[in-house]
Amino acid sequence: MTLDRLRPLVDRTLAPFVAGFDRLGLSPDGVSVLAFLVAVAAGGCFALASTAPAWYVAGAVLVGVNGTLDVVDGALARRQGVEGDAGDLFDHVLDRYADVAVVAGLAAGTEAYALGFAAVTGVLLTSYLGTQVEAVGLDREYGGLLGRADRLVLVAVVTTLAAALDAAGVEATLLDYEPVGWLLAVLAVVGHLTALQRFWGARRDLT
Image (cartoon, rainbow, N blue to C red; front, side):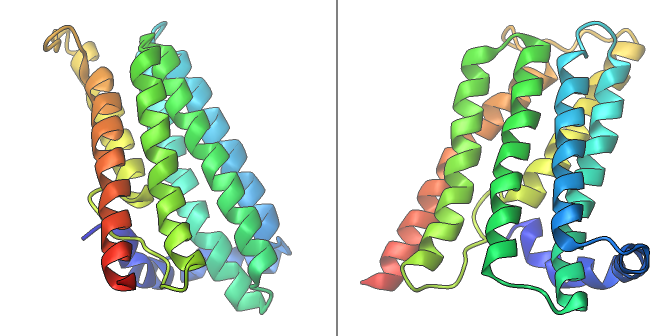
C-alpha cells in the first residue's frame, strides 16, 4: 500500500488551502504550474547541496510544497467544477517534468549521474504504468512498492537526514555511497520493481 491511496484523507485535510486558492482566483492549471516551478527550484537546491548541505533542507521543504500543491490542484478543479481530461493531462505532464527536475538535481548534487539515469527511468516508468493501465480499460493504478507520494516523502526525509548528518560532522558513507546516493539507488531499483508490479497486476486483471 502506498501513500497515494491516502489521497481522499489528504484532500479533506487540505480543504482550507483549496478554499483559499479559490478565493484568490487561482485556476487548477495555475496551481499545477506553480507546483512544477517549486519542483524545479527543489532540484536546483539539491544540485547546490555539494556547496552547502543546508541546500538539502531547502530542497526537502520545496519537495513537500510540491507534493501539497499536487494534491491541491485536483481538489481545486473539483471545487470549481472544471475537472476534465485536459486538466488531468496537463497536470500529469508537469508532474513528470517535476520528477525529472528533482531527480536530476539529486544526481547533479552528488555527481552520481549513472544512478540518476537509472532512478529517473524508474520513476518515469512507474508513473507511465500507472496511467497506461487506465488506457487499457482498468482503473488508474496508484499501488505498488513506491508511488509518487512515497517518493516525495522519501526524498524529503533522506535529504534532511543527509544535511543533519553533515551538520553533526558524521561520516555516513556506505560502500562509497552517501545517503543521497543510496536514495537514488532505491529510487532506481524500487521504481523499476514498482513499474513491473503494476504491469503484472494489470496483465493479470486483463487475462
